[in-house]
Image (cartoon, rainbow, N blue to C red):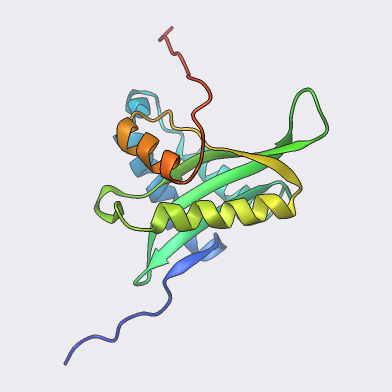
Length: 159
């Protein structure tokens, strides 16, 4: 007898019951990224996710993608004003899809949902970054296919 297939796949807002799994995805992102040698503060990340979950700020949101009952992607983002204007811009703090779930539509679905949410918040522009060092050329190709334009670079130096 085969197991029933779950139909709960898709993008949704992070809720309290997903906080532990969201924390694990944030930790996995950290471990895979160039930031792995910087201390991961569990309490800080948990508080950030909880704040987004509780809608502590109407301008911060956390979307997750669930597939077969498991969290397979996460996007934490926000809307803020440009420093030179009252107009708003939507930006991500992080977007992560675990390696074994990449190559499908998860990141695309998360970004589309974030973009819709950002429009309801009055954002004039969507700005997504890629600073983790995880497959940068694949990321560039992905963002390019979505119609996002590369407009600059980030330069780093350890201190």
